[in-house]
Length: 429
Image (cartoon, rainbow, N blue to C red; front, side, top):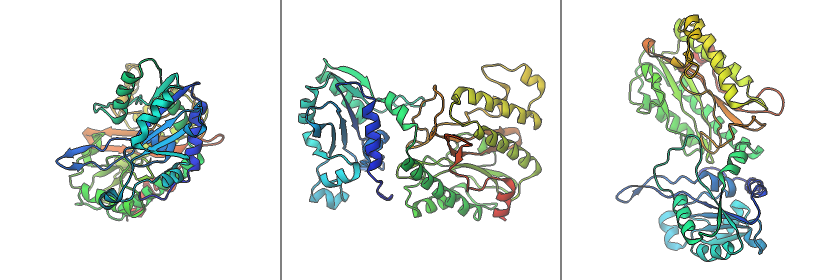
């Protein structure tokens, strides 16, 4: 791994939080992700399932975590199963977790080889009454591929039909949404790497540069700072490309007089950052560009102030819509009649701002976290309003990552990254 080893005390705390919320005589199992094939002998780079990483720190394929707080044998209350390594694997693939290293990384004392799983698991299931499966219930999930977790659940239901079934996701949504201090440090590191990349490109962008050249500059800076690279597919959208919300081609030239919408950020130790900035290709906003830019910035600043304990996510988004409506009227894009006659299910502002303002962020860019209960301290949200005007070839989005504080205004993890229009112009020139 490129990142420095994370103290296992974080994973010890995370497991304790999870197990405290488990029902009696319940056993929970977490599987690593598959290595996904491309074709022939090629595979995609391995990405660990974020849940098993959150609970163990094990960042390796073919790994299983078992949590059983009521196990009669105390050493079986936490077990990590890892792939047995050998000299051949070491030569072809490099170092893998040994039993000793597995304990060092995770804080789990009982480490078994994966080949022992079926025997140990059968023995534990004779003591358990309920099996807790790790299903993906994120509100944005759209998974068509059968995962390693899915195959385990299918097999387990067939082999242990008399056991009751529970789900781990409810607990994970609750605890993963509230970050530990160690997690905030890792997320700050990801944001700091993102800052270095953004400052690098401010001196690089000029008329005629290709979008993919900007992507290359960012990737160079991110990897140079111990990141694997982008936390999500980078959006580098110049001109009217900015009005395609998930523009990913990054293959067009950046023309004089246009702006570039940059939705790009680094990961660090599997933790995401999520940044959006919009900059002028030639280093100088036009009058109209700056008007739209500053309108978006005002919405972002006011929306950020609302991310405090007790705020309801749904009500927060309604208030953000009111802020945006006011700005769109001020820009001449909406009038009072548009607002008075709007469809409550699709308010008038949605014509120019059609996505949400905030989402949880952490181990996933769109992270786990409760959305129907009041916000709590140490939740981390993006704030990302935008205004998109295809007929004017203007698309502006601004985004930072902020921590809900117990008292006072949220803490902006990206507070050092330039955002004011005048500062952007000064740095580019």
